[in-house]
Amino acid sequence: MLDRRPGGTTVVRESLTRGLIGVRAYFGGALSEAREDLSYRPRLHPRQRPRRRPVPRLLRRAVPIIAVGLVTVLAADIMVLGEFGKRESWAAAPAARVPIPKRDAGYVAATRDLPAAKAQTQTRSQAQTQVAPLVALRKPHLFVVTPRSLSAAAVRKVKARRDVKDVEVVNAAEVMMDGKRVQTMGVDPSTFRAYTPRSTARSDALWNSVAAGDIAVSFTLGNDGGVALGSTITGGGRKLRVGAYATMGMGMINAVVSRQVATSLGIPERNALLVSAPGIDSTRLRLRLLKILPKGSQVALINPVLTPPAQGRTSWPVGSFMTSDQLRVALTAGAGKLGRPYVWGAEGPDTFDCSGLVQWAFAQAGVRMPRVTHQQWVSGPQVPLAQAQPGDLLFWRSDPTNPGYISHVAIYWGDGKMLHAPRTGDVVKIAPINTRNLAGVVRVSPSVAARVR
Image 1 (cartoon, rainbow, N blue to C red):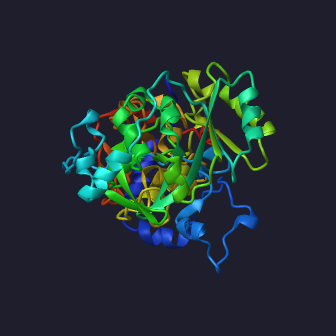
Image 2 (spheres, rainbow, N blue to C red):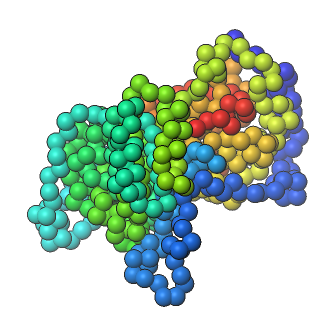
Image 3 (spheres, rainbow, N blue to C red):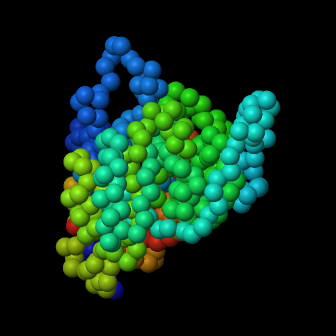
């Protein structure tokens, strides 16, 4: 049985009851609303930074690019911005869902459904090339990203390691798309598909759509971010058609395009790697790869897990968890943002996505949380819902394209309610808990949370 925090529930509830009415005014003067910047991201080399005048054509296209590599969490974690489906009903009141055409498992738009002129559609169909058939699946374990293109020699060094089975070279960057920061990969659809979940990898229609110039976005970006299947979005100075919803099984990736499209968006070429190393300690391999990769390279585990001894514990010392004061501060900080709008990828202090709200609120209490849902999922031991206490985290799996993926997080408020940032078009709110697709409850251990990679 997990040790309960002494008096935590009573103290927190009484404190919240006394302080909630004046929470906005209190935090206006008592707490700094310092945003935790995305500090672990590849930076442009000084010689590569764009000048204001003149602006080369390629850089004009790349204005929406926030960084030349995928953004990352804190000082050592690749950032993942995958959250909960936009129209899932978290509160009691139902909401309309984004319409999804029922073909190819319901998540690939047919050419005729895309908002393009008939002539243009015909041209696309004629020019479309078939991707190579899927031969075998490969599980990715590590993600490497660098500020600039990797040399052939650097790639060979990684491939030559005996503990590395397969390597896939890709392009990677964060791109502004319709005002949203979207972690995007440029890939060869014929080879990259093998590194995705089985349902995604097997869809010829999906990968032919990408090869033809469409963008495939994660189901969570589609629903949470309000990006409708078959719609047109603007990124990197050009319009892209959303040809598919497809979660890639890598939390840090929310969009995939072909390499040709990636180049037109200004994404650096060949600046990232997927590394498959089954049966190997990924944490140790990460350190080994950092020694042979170029300076400035970053390596992160694609799907972190709760590491021992935390994973096997059945009882925890009281000091392992947040104190009553920390819980009060985190909950009150979160409540101070009631009514603030949900924005995909936002971390505060004025707008939030679901995991961004958790990270920001807990930071006010001095607790360093990882940035995204699937990392926050391993920030402490799981407890039964019946034993949930205010300040525990609630998680859901609601992505039909990747049912095992943790897609939403909320903070348990007490009395069967939760504090969360639901979806695009909604605001930070307190609502009744919806147990549909509930994955579990996690009691945050600050020491464990700080070590999540």
